[in-house]
Every structure is written in C-alpha cells, then in structure tokens.
Length: 209
Image (tube, rainbow, N blue to C red):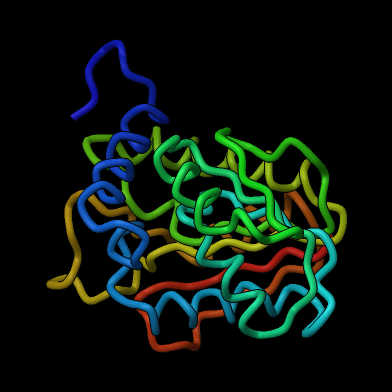
C-alpha cells in the first residue's frame, strides 16, 4: 500500500524492483507468465511499424530490455531506447546489452527524445494499493507523454475488462477497451486500431499519427 509520502511512481517502482530482484532477467522478473506470451505481446505492438525497418523506437517500461532482444531475433533494424523507472531494471538491461550499438537505456518515467514510434507493454496492468480513478488519470498522462515522444505512432496494451471475473486479481487493472479506443480516437488521431483477437486476456491499441 502507498503511504502519504509516496508517489504513484514510487509504488510501481518498488513493485517491479522487487520482481527483478526475485526472478532476474526473465519474464517473471517483469511480472509476465512466460516467454511465449511476452513475444506475442511484442508481435502485436510491432504491427504499428514496418515489418523490417522500424526506425527509432522508444520502449516505455522496458524492464531488462526483452523487446530489444526480440527486435534483434526477428531481424528488425531499430535505433532502440529503453526507459524504466526502476534503477535495478536499467542496470541489468545495460549489462545485458553492453555490446549492442543500437540500444540505449535510461532511468526515467518518459523518453528523452522524440522517436518514430513509442510502445509500452504491461505498464498499465499493476496498481498495488492505488485507487482506480488515480490509475486511470495516470494512464492518460502516460499516453500524453507517449504521444509527445512519437512522430509516426505509439502503441500499448492493457488487461481487458472482458477477462473472466473468476480470473481477475484485486491488484491488477482491467481496462475498458472501447473506452480507451474512444479516448485515443478523440484525443490523438483518426487512425486508431484496437486489437482484441489474440489469445491473451488483454488488448493492444495502436495509434498512427
């Protein structure tokens, strides 16, 4: 639970730093169930970009840099910037990618550059002890930042409100996909895609600018 002196970012940072300390540079270390679902999320997000030549890409909430690895494995050329509020995550990401000339990592809540694209995978799912209204306002603020950091488009995913009720957890945030689609359509662009047809309890929204 957050206390009166903690910011929302402090609560989230502590949660994820605890995860990476417990599980290391693995999907569990960034609170995912496994590598296959992690890769499926990346595939959905990268539908925003050209199949091979991504250009410049900001990854908000990058964790240990798994998306950077996925870009290399799938032979996509990208100038990649990973951003995370956890110093421990960034320290591990920098160590793992020390020999890569196309990856950079910073400790920050937002990118320090404008890129072709900005993506965020999983950063809106966990809200330990944070009320729903505050979390929704937080999501809107992060999306504004992603828009400001992107020239061609941005994308993100959320757990879906259409998840089976018996599978939901109190500390997780389940977003209304139609509500977020409408928000992005009215606030950012006419060209918005809602992907809700893959085998996870979530959805992806792609905003093309």
